[in-house]
Image (cartoon, rainbow, N blue to C red):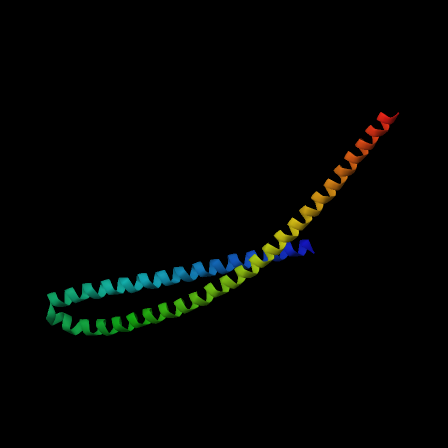
Length: 144
């Protein structure tokens, strides 16, 4: 039974590690989306400056750019919200897996402690018997 408990501990540890890797990937995606959204904002500011410098040419081109930028901004915001929702779910899954892992680890520690105490008691009983035998032999020698 103890061997199967070690197997369960390894299985849950693997699951926790796998969930952590997934969470790390999701965090990287969110970071990348935020970076792209910030780059879009920078590009919008640059295009606005260009449009101000030459209003006659920019009036024709900037309208399409602004419409496309607004759409992209909304897409980034929606994608970030969706990933943040997935992050919350993934964090909950990690917590649940970790609770399961901790339960098995604590049970194994209790079993190990019980085995250790039993082994100590057994060793102490042997030492007590050796001491009693030595004492009895000493008494027998003294009476002879």
